[in-house]
Length: 173
Ligand SMILES: CC(C)(COP(=O)(O)OP(=O)(O)OC[C@H]1O[C@@H](n2cnc3c(N)ncnc32)[C@H](O)[C@@H]1OP(=O)(O)O)[C@@H](O)C(=O)NCCC(=O)NCCS
Image 1 (cartoon, rainbow, N blue to C red):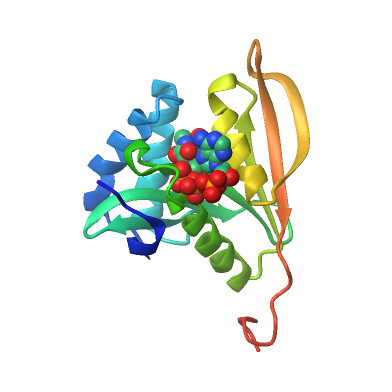
Image 2: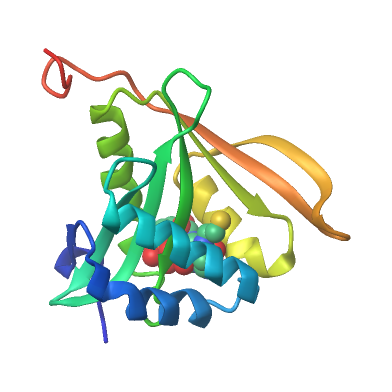
């Protein structure tokens, strides 16, 4: 498979994609089994009730899901949004799929009035590529809590201010 970003299409995922989501999330090798369960719960919720708590966006190579994001407004904030999950199939990584997903996710958040995107990740060495990815997309390190996830597994919070909508992109005129 060679799902270059230029050949993937982005659209809302469907419940039938659940098996692919499970396989991709497991195949990354960075998530514990309990995290895989949470990823699937969030995905299920996003496709069953889009936009109630979570939104989802999928990247497809033909009809095969090769990556997705789940995101939603952060409760008790004024227009801050959380990126809850992003995964790209290891076989399709480093081809720009993640960057395309993030650009479209940020556009969707901005279109809904979002102004700040926050994403939580780990300090572990196996998350080095993930941290490099957020930094490449101009997310800044906003917070660091030592041993948050586990001993020797710190929380790193990345954040990005979205540019205000222009006259062309403003959702409400
Ligand atoms: C993080 C992830 C979504 C990136 O997806 P991707 O499609 O491979 O990323 P892209 O190809 O769009 O990369 C965009 C840029 O990010 C940076 N980047 C991505 N992967 C990288 C890596 N392994 N090492 C260093 N930099 C990397 C590069 O600057 C890259 O641009 P370049 O290829 O032109 O140099 C993917 O690696 C993944 O699914 N990881 C496992 C799951 C995960 O950690 N999810 C986040 C949980 S918080």
